[in-house]
Length: 535
Image (cartoon, rainbow, N blue to C red):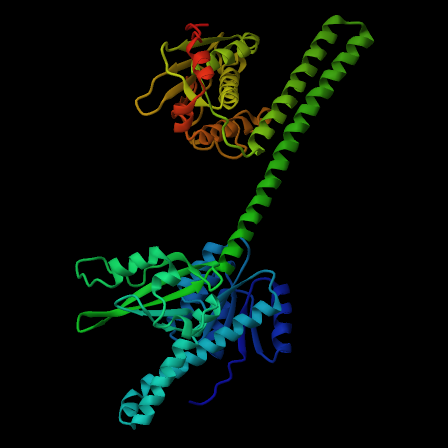
C-alpha cells in the first residue's frame, strides 16, 4: 500500500483566536493546515482537499460540529474527526463518540492533548487502510502460500494486541485465553499471569461473571441479544485497585455452539475526571447564582433599614412620636428579615442527617401555631390548628420539622395579606391527620392569592419566589430539603385567587429509632396532650 501523507488537517472553529493559535501549533509540528470559520465552509474545503484529519468545534452557528461529523462519516472516507468541546458539553461529546468521532479534546486546547489525539487518529486511519487493503485483495491472498496465511494471522494477532481498547477473551468455562497489551497495561498483569490461570470473574468481578454465565455463554434464541450492550463496571488491577471501565461482550459461535466470549473495555478515568470538572463548574455557577440572589435580598433589606432610620431621625428632629414608632417598626421588621435570611442560609447550606427522636406531630404543629399567632394577627389572618387526636408518635428531627412548618405557615400568612388577596380577613389552617401510605401528614391550607399553574413546578427549585423583591426562594427550598432528609415528600395543590394547600408527608422514621426509642422519650411523648383543634 502506498504511503499517504496523514499530516494534513482541516480546522473548523468559529473563534478566530482558536484558529490562529491551533494553526500555528500544527504548522510548527509539520502539518499542512486549512481553516474554516463555520461548518458549511469547512465541509466545502473537505470536499475539495479531502484532508485525513479534521478538528471541529462542537458548537457553532449554522452547521454545528455534530452535523459536520455526521456528513463527513456519510462520505465514507478514511478521514477521522476530532471534536473540540467546552466544559459543560459532556453529553454532546459522548454523542459525538457514538457517531464514530475519533476523539474529543476540551477547551482550552493544550498542545499535548491535541497531538496525542492526532496521533491516535493517524494510527486509526493507517490501520483502517491496512484492513481495507487486505480485504480488497482477499481472493489473491487466499491463493498465496501457507506462509502468507501465517503472516495474515500474525497481523490479526498484532491488531488485537495493539488495540487501544482492552480485549479479554474467555472460553466457555470462563477461563481467559486472550489478554491483550492494553489490558495488561491497565491492570498491571502480564499475559503469563492471566491466560489459562485466571477467570473473567477474577478480573471483572462477580457481576460480570454472572452476566457471562447467564447471557453470553448460554445460547438462547428467544433471549434478547446482549451483544453491543454497554456495562459500566470496574476492573481489578494487580495491586487491587478498582478502575472504572465501559465494557461490552460478544458471544463467539461456531455451528450454533458457544465457543466462548470476547469482551472489550475502555478506561473511563478520564471521562470520570471530566465529569467531576463539569460538576465543579456547575457548582461554581450555583455559587454565583446564590451570591447574586443573596446580595439582592440583602440590598432590599438594607434599603428597608435605611428607610426606617430616616423615619426615626425625622421623628427625633420633629419630636413626633408617630414617626418614631413607625420608623422603629420598619427597623424591627427588616432586622427580622435579616435573621430569617441567615437561618434559611444556614439550613440550606448545612449537610446533615436528621437527629431523630420520637415526638408527637400535634405538639410540634401546636408550637408553630402559637409562635405565628402574633404575625397572623398583624396581617389580619385567622390562624387555626385542626389536630387529629390519637396520632402515634413518630421518629423525626423535631427542630427540622418545626422550621419546615414555620416556613409553610409564614408563606401562607403572606399569601393572605389583604392588600394581595383582597380578603378582609384571610384564613390559614394547620391540619394534622393520618394518611394511608405515610406515618403522618401535616397540611397548611390558606385562602390566599394562590399559585399560577406554571409556577407549581418551580416553587421548590433554586431561588424561585412568587414574592418578587420580598422573597429569596430559600424558604421552600429548605422545606423540600428537610422533607427529603426525612425520606418524606412535599405536595402542593393551588387554585389562583382561591388559595393553596401544602402537604408534608413523613414516614415512620428509621426502624431503630422506632424500636429502640428510649423509655424516657416514650413516657414523655405518651403523656403529651395534643393541642385541641382551633388552638
